Amino acid sequence: MIVAVASGKGGTGKTSVAVNMALSVGKLQFLDCDVEEPNANLLLHSTINKTEPVYVLVPAVDEGLCDLCGKCAEFCQYNAIFVAAQKLTFFSELCHSCGGCTIVCPKNAISEERHRIGVLKYGSVGDLEVVYGELDVGKPMAVPVISEVKEQIRSDRNVIIDSPPGTSCPVIEAVTGSDFCILVTEPTPFGLHDLKITIQVLENMGIPFGVVVNRSGIGDKETYDYCKKKDISILLEIPYQRRIAELYSKGIPFTLQMPEWKRKFQKLFEDIRKLAHK
Amino acid sequence: MKQLTILSGKGGTGKTTITASLAVLTEKAVVADCDVDAPDLHMLLHPEIIKTEEFAGVKLAVVDKEKCTKCGLCREKCRFHAITEDIEVQPISCEGCAVCVIICPVDAISLVERVSGHAYISKTENGFMIHAMLSPGEANSGKLVTLVRQNAKKTAEEQHADFVIIDGPPGIGCPVISSVTGVDAGLVITEPTMSGIHDLERALQLLNYFKVKPFVCINMFDINQENTNRIENFCKESEIEFVGRIPFNPVVTKAMVNGETIVKYAPESDVAGEIARMSKKLLSALNNGSG
Image (cartoon, rainbow over all chains, first blue to last red; front, side, top):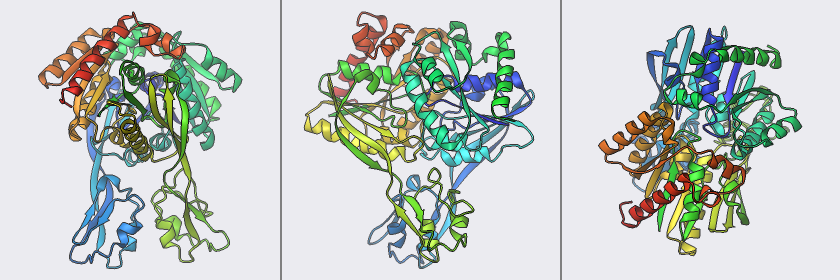
């Protein structure tokens, strides 16, 4: 079973829920797909035993063959190629690696080369296998790094995916193919607003989901009313407690110090299994 | 005119709460919400929309079923796995690159415009607010952020505003890059947690990469005094201007629930006081051209 943990609004506790659930359930693969800010390992403390660069393909122009006809620039939907009278200029940060320029070039002057945009890190802690991606600073495209992390999914294990915040393409990439998605929210107007947008995304994608309310006790009742009205299950509530916040700040998953929570996260996983029919 | 972007790396550190307060405290400012896929600033500033513009992001491939022979070449060449076995285009995966258009031997595929969101120019009690909403699940948020930035700059020029205050998205990827390129300064809001520190470092590297002057503020500093000290020492050693230390106070959430900025809802609170002090420091630093 593949379970993604997403949120819409950032900082609602995705990583905390994903990590505490993984540690409580055990024997699974943990993928951190928040490649812009991969923070799960700051809580998991897995030992990294392998690091691999992530590349995308970008055009490489043979200046001897190029006659500056401009067909590639005209074709490129992302304005990543600019052809002036004397020179072809390429902007790797705008390139989507579609490969179209190599096809349209009448002189076969364009081939492709690898361009590094991030790294993949592999580690383990206890019986958990950990993989996470890290986008290089200054590189805009998170999606190819996320996609590379997801290539590592093992079909013989349960998988937990820590998704990035937001509701746009990196989130789609992270949650695609999941059997179930946990939406972590906080019961505040911001949390609810962004939760509603994320629910639209998941409904469009046809992925079953449920809500975990983090920091319950703060904010208002609107989130609960909304879930009730929409018949969305609230799978778990984690109260706002200074102790939990302090443990998080030190990089300690709270289930390790508050073992009564281990059972609750195990039950959460079992409930999801039923909801996902797995 | 000076432009300041509020960013954080890690989500949920208080960017929007602080941006809204800075907008209220700053005279002659235009405020922009560049978190276009999960915008929240409007819930505190209550903008009245005066102009709406459709945003056409990436185009979408459309297959003419009459012409299509289902040869499968498009499916083979599409690197975004956007074409199904039945030669149907999945809009959620299509990036509008046009490879399928040029590869189709019977010219059955074309690109069409699609509306990926809306951009707004609005008025609030305090002046103009520029914002947008990406349709759920759409790509190209960076391009919509660029549109918001252009609208903000133009509005600021027309209104003779002194400042553009920009609420950035979390992360360091494309929409964040679009939010920080060409601004005079970036204010990184962090929290004293291991994740906050890790993401602060990446946000500072990003600002350095794009040659943007950094400022740092710690929100909820009293959650972990030791980490707060670490961050402040790090700023001192790296010669980064540290501008604010905001305490944890549940009144911030109460203000949010009431749809108000903390500086208006609880002007006497410790949080409002610290944001006001920080605002003065920032504006004078920007005016002195250190941006």
